[in-house]
Image (tube, rainbow, N blue to C red; front, top):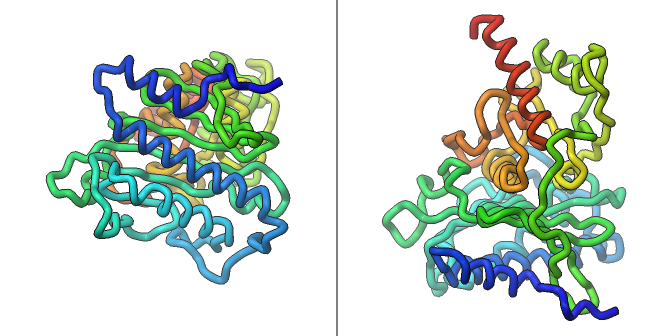
Length: 339
């Protein structure tokens, strides 16, 4: 049956803004531009094997990772789709070393956009879901061109955040601080339709998503925590292991089904691996809006003040009870060693 009775993302955003004290057409327009870019990326990802855009470029990105061709394509799509509309003072991307200036000739607006254009892109070649993550902040600096102070705001200052997962269906989940809402792309009409209103993540987890291959490099407190989740100390029923290595895919499963995603610090990544601005902050905002939590081991992710664009952080994110356990065990061992 046709889905014409369902609410489109565009309509949902407008209605949400109507009920908000700070009605803002610029934010509505910006999220529309973001959803357009994600439709383009969804098509590019689906056609990747046919267009010769799989595999690696010879270039490496700012993180020293080999860039996938589709990473570059997705990054360009985001920039082109969002630069022209007049809502932005600047953009930052996980793929770019420096902030992206809005080209002269386009009006500038009051927002800044941070994004990871194609998260989990090492999985593209084997048809595992990948995603796009985005975060919107309000400009606090005085000039028309946003500066670094605009980008380096704590996650609590986010105005909107979301992710798109290009999986068996393409889904967009976003929040403006009024709950987390999920929309599924209907390819026949090219619209995101409301499918998961007001997502609430289960309080107790079912799944544990962590890369076990780093176990030897974890600190003792981290090892003890993961053992507890696995039920190895006999104190609780074990969580089921589920780890696909696409943050968006792992996070999305746990958001809907309940669970914890962990990327602890290890001896290779002493400050963690995931990026605060492009990954941890937006997902933490969504997770808190869905009744879950997100910490770096000690502090709420959203309370961290970034000091650099590509700052990394450990991440424990998901169901409230599982995050509380992480906070308790990691803090206990900190006090035990007198840190």
